[in-house]
Structure formats: C-alpha cells, structure tokens
Length: 406
Image 1: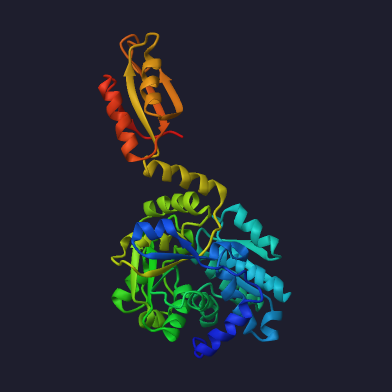
Image 2: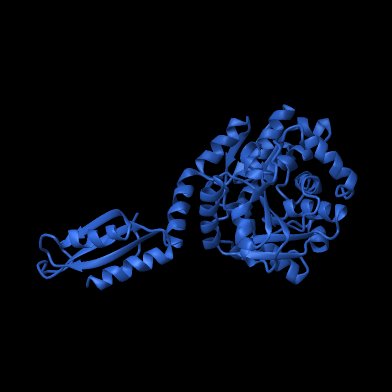
C-alpha cells in the first residue's frame, strides 16, 4: 500500500468520497479574521454526514478492499467519529460492521453508530483497550480490521479535504489540522505539499495529549504515559507508525493548546458562527492566537461536531465563567429588612442580570450581625464585572468572589 500517498491516488480518492460526502464549502470568519489580523476561512467538516471527516477515510479504505475482504465483515475500534464513519460507509457498501467502543463512550454516540446498521461491542475504559480487543476479534473471527488512523488508504481518504481547500482557495497560506493519531494531517499535509509546496501545514494537539509533538522531537514514534484532555477525539497515546514518516517530511510545525482555550473557543463558535464544533475540532480555532503571523489566508479544519448535550452544557457554563460573563459574589449583610433591596439596586443600576440568589441565615451564630448572600449574575465581560464589584465596594458591601454554583 506504499503507493497510496500519490497525487493519482488522491485524485481517485476525491472522486470516490464525493459519492457519499456532503460539500463543506469554506466559511469566511470575519470575527476570527479581525482577532487574528489574518483572513480566516473555516473548513466545516462538523457539517459532514456523520458529523465528522472520518467518513472520507473509511469509505475510501473500503473501496480499495477486495470483495472477499469486505464480505468477511469489517471491524474497528473507536469512541465516536471513526465508529460512525465506518458504520455509515459499510452500510453504503452493504457489508457487516462491528465497532468496539470503550465503555465510557457517551450513549448518544453508541446509538448513532447503531443507527447506521453497525453492531457495537462495549469493551475497556479507553480507546487502546478497545482497539486491542478489536484486533483479537479480527484474528478470531476473520474480520477485516480498519485502523482509525495508522493506515495509508485511510489517510489518503482524509487528504481529500486538502484537495477541496486548494480548489476553493488556491492562494491559501496556512492549513491548521487537529492531530490525534495523525491520519488526517498525514493526508492533508502530503497532498497540500504535492500540489503547492509553499503551503504551511500546522498540526494542533491538546497540551496533555501531545504524542505527535513528542514523537517529532525524539525522531521516532513515542508513547505518552497518560493523556488527559476534554478533546476526547484526539486523546491518543501513540501516533501511527506507518504514517509517521510522512508527518516528519510534510508537517511544518505543531502547536499545543490547553483545555481551557477549547472551552472559550466553543463559546466563540456558538455565538459568532452559530455552529456546534466538538472539542477536538476546536483545536485549530484555539491555535490561531498562538500564531505570530499577519495578513495570511488561514484555513482551520473543524474536524467534527459530535458533542453530547451534557458535555455541551458543561462547556457553555465553563466558557461563560472563563469569559467573566457569569460570576458569583458573596456579601455579608445585617439581617434586617431592605438590605437585599440595596444590593439589588446597585446591580440593577449597572445592568447586571441576577441569575441566582442564595440567602444563608446560618452563616453566623449571630444572624442579626451578619447573614451571607451569594449572588450569581450575568455580565457583559471582564470590564463590566469589575465595574459591578467596585460599585458594591463603594456601597460598603465588601463583595468576595466565590466559585459559581450553577
């Protein structure tokens, strides 16, 4: 399969994947362009069928198989996007698919994978355990295994994204690519350099799941002791061995971002672009603030949009807190009529919006001396928050910031 990553194969893959993919046209982001002093065009693979780019690699991989390999049944391991991509592609080919998923996989992702006709097997606490079991089943039952990222045909299918970007924006300067195991950036970087060697391809990893950055620094595939990130789609300990040489040759740099940056980026995408992008897909958006460039045409790939509602609610809440849009103060008041009104008037006059009040009369054994009032409120941002705090201090309330309890 070493001949996979050639221009001819990429052209073939582009024709093949267009049979099942949705056209994800670039979206110019005025908001991100102004913030970064560049021209930023989003590649919204979060709008793809199955909600992620993974369908491309899965479908093209199956197209390269023999009839006998397909008829044996397909098996893979995944906690979400690759699972749905293989399930959907297998359904299109009319063949059986078994997906081994970690027991920690959100129920919505399991059900969605089943909805494409795949059989799901729950095993292990993480991807590595699930993958090991999937390989055992493949050996035992004779299934054909499809690796999520360490496969040249899969990488070729993922690389069709670069073909579309360059066709639509021929003068693109930078392409930003999320990295988990490395399949997506292998395809994108290789094709981008084949078509236009001057394009810069930058990989983006979570700070606490930077297996590719570590491997490139050491010059060999290396394994992290542990990974910890809310970007679960890129929480990989060991990058692909087959694809690593292509990454060494074609990837220009790797940026790492912290989880807190993803939380804020999610809020930006929802409020300014009306789009749901999962944490792994937000890596490239968060990376923009780390780039010391101006006046360039930059394309961040939004790799997916599959986020369960509970996670989404948590990310929104934490994003509002991080942006000082929601905060909680504690003030001590004498337990007598009219004190609550005085506090409320200060907040109302400055257009703060009270979300929650907690009135604790048992804060002190002498409640006539002091009761505690915790006020959770909404503000426009950091400057507005500070204005409210100073106004409360000016009225003698001595507000103390505490952790919001939403």
